[in-house]
Length: 112
Image (cartoon, rainbow, N blue to C red; front, side, top):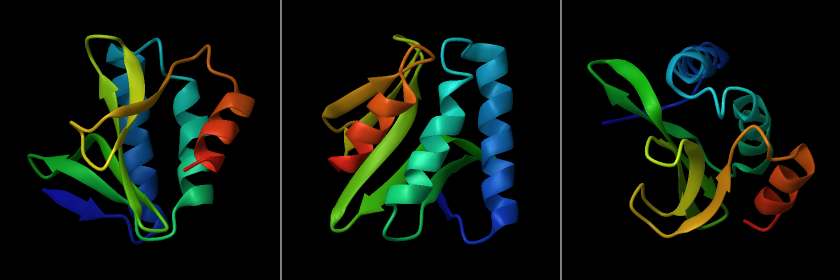
């Protein structure tokens, strides 16, 4: 199920959950998360949605830029965050980890 982020409080709750999970399970991405959040806010042209599980926010975010929808999720196997076309199973457009620069994130999101 998806939750539409409509308030700063919901966004804060989601980011805190992602950061807590990244600090625990995703040491490879616990820093780039904040840059990605800024890029999502910058490029979103519609409401952002996040996955929920057991009434808590989870690690999948859906972003729409103009008419194109993207899913952003943590890949446990590669230990990277991926942005995919349309759905969590779509084609991988880019991967991110703590070695990804803010400049690279900006370039990737600028092309969406």
